[in-house]
Image (cartoon, rainbow, N blue to C red; front, side, top):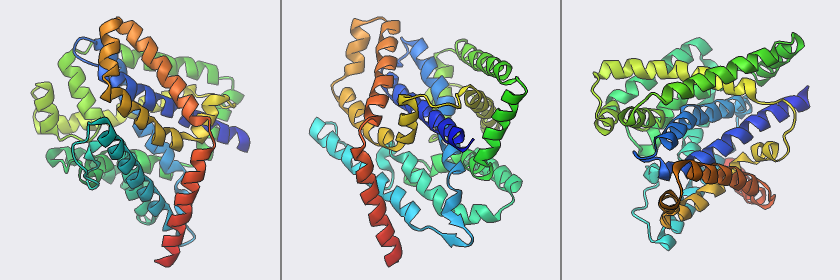
Length: 354
């Protein structure tokens, strides 16, 4: 049971990190002329980072236990965040696409997740003392109100607030509860039925996205990325809602994410999936390394070139296949973990010194 539990969550992380890579590769061709690409990007963005943060929260319980707080953990994530941001900005200098170095905002770039994880882990001692229901309710209220006057990219504050309910949901839920639920479904021979239902719900969600026009797709993308104020979302999409209507939409967003995430989790196999499981075990190195490839492709306008020579379906086949392959290739070598281990060791030394 324990091995299956580990395999299940590694499979889940593997699928999610593959979707992260695919989403980033598709994004450059997701223009007004390629509505299918935009719908796929919006579909991925609906749940992939919320679910990733949910899983992160689930495995952060050991940060504060029996009154002891591991200071080295937030230092480790912050160090990785700054390292990745510096590497990516250095790459931009080499590629001739550098604009500014802004570690306090991360220039809205990919390392934001590590900054958010740093903030969440720092607050774990507080979360551990709160009643889960009150903490979750308060975090949703905070997230909904954040859009009224968005703090923007400063320390990725907006994303930290908007994604906080997902972290807390994972933090307060035991991983064994998820596995136990799936095991009981299997025992009662209901797992297959549940998976068919989950696949139907996800297909229905994507079907709904296929009815959304260009302005609506912009609206949803801005909403799902969690870094924009309501005013920014409305300006970018050209749509007209009151701020209180936008607050209601964000509230509804949490139900949509919960439904989509539950369906994805039902569909994830519990047994090992070879390279996919390994990608989950090494999801951090895939997350860390893939933007280097992504930035290089963007610098050479690979997406625009591909869009010019192939129809949209052809582009999607290449990019989705390439995204899967890239994620699995980046997960293959063991040497990046040695770099992370050294950063973790340094964070441990700093924690002891403090």
